[in-house]
Amino acid sequence: MTTLPSFDDHTDVANADRGFVGTTSQSEIKDAAGRVVWDLGWYAFLDADCPPTANPSLWRQSALNAKHGLFEVTEGIYQVRGFDLSNVTFIEGERGVIVVDPLLSVEPAEAALALYRAHRGERPVVAVIYTHSHADHFGGVRGVVPDDANVPIIAPSGFLEHAVAENVYAGTAMNRRAIYMYGAELAKGPDGQIGAGLGQTTSTGTISLIEPTLSITETGQEEVIDGVRLVFQLTPGTEAPAEMNFHLPERRALCMAENATHTLHNVLTLRGALVRDPRVWARYLTEAIELFAADSDVLFASHHWPSWGTAELTAFLSQQRDLYAYLHDQTLRLLNQGYTGLEIAERIQLPPALERAWHARGYYGSVSHNVKAIYQRYMGWFDGNPAHLWELPPEESAKKHVEYMGGAPSILPKAKQALESGELRWAAQVLNYVVFADPGHTEARDLLARVYDRLGHGAENGTWRNFYLQGAAELRGRKAPASIDTTSPDVAGALTLEQLFDSLAIRVDGPRAWDTRLVIDWVFTDLDQTVRLSLANGVLTQSTGKDAGPADLTLTLTKPQLLGVIATGNLDGVQAEGDPAIVTTLVGLLDEPVRDFDIVTP
Image (cartoon, rainbow, N blue to C red; front, side, top):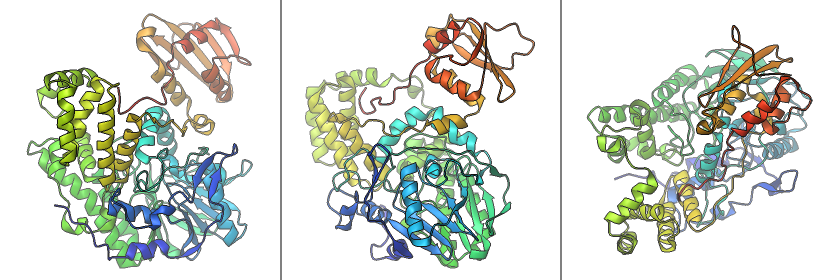
């Protein structure tokens, strides 16, 4: 039996309002084509009391996240909140301003900088800090840095590798699932999308990237930017593969990036990612306490609102640390007693002190799916039961389940009864069989959509609610289109040659390429580098080509020209020795990713 914190505790409300300077009168933020990519008025309905179609705890969290405008954190540090999923922070120096985590897309970042300057003057941007490698912390950078500017871009070691790998290798599938996770295409309202726990939702503007010019390579590294001293703490393998916190000693302020926010975070996001390590996450939070807490009066992060007071922020960090450590240790304790991930997720309950802490609630991550992720990290997908070793794929399994249960006419009345009696999890499982066995079964689709509505409206976790409600919309024929493209020209241009060619190898249709053999040498004049691509057995491999035979085709070009060849297969302006048709052959063996694939139907 879970215990909610007290709704009479208004500390978070006061902190979310504290330091408010002002907001913009322009509600809609649009891209160059006039398309609305963010609207500050979307969530005005959250000012009302919580309706029956929402979990009161999530409603409270969303109302806090929806507060928008410029806020003073402490002297010389300001944040714009509520303009995107994340916050952007402005640290004032001697002549300009350092921008920290410039949001997901260019247009909201431009609007945030304009709001800051409207109240603080036309200070030039003198540096940008990316705290970590997720797109909502770098994608808006060209909204704050002009194309002709030459300012330091500071990021943790490994930032570029992880930023581009996540958004390219599995980017299509991740972006598709992110639509469900953040609910960006759902109607905003008491019956629909009310938030995502970490923030309200994702903006849908232009994603950009400027490569870092200064890497933070060790904890304790200090940099002075425009007279501002920053002390960094590297935290790889926590919320992101490349991440860092930093301290401003003279201002007694601590930035925790996304490692300590006002929610239980994800060990594995529902959109998909590498499983994170809650063990080292907890240890880095302990390290942050030891390094910085006693010398800090305020803690701020790239999401949510700050915490003020040395004792208060130390307690906050300690509870956040205990949250990840407890889930890690108890999951390992129980898996070593023979329980599976599903079983452990049903058994684990947080200690009362953590359950009563608002910032430890599962608005974004959840105890349930984080426990399963920890199990996956250590044990993989297989639970040891041989019945699960070679299961039938979903459609074939569903057809046999439905047949064994007497067919859809027998199942639907029982599913309706389960819905009416509140057995929503079972109703969803059974009706999913019917839909996968017969995707055109209108009554089953409608009934499953109603079940998803009920599950979504009761969910405390914002991303669970969005998944359920977006799933219901798909069942009703309202499939959301992909609206975000993380493989923008900026992101593609930041890929290394190895990553670019890896992105091609991932797209090779193996069976169609089984019998094709070809070798292409790519000579890059701007990089003084040669890469040999060899296709054999449906595998595209890279090598230097040294001590090997001649290539079928040699192309002499620049890296920007390679991007054009990959996009179009056209060799205009490229020097070719050999048979140019080989490029056409290779391009013809590449699959195009499906951006709008179905999720809740076959």
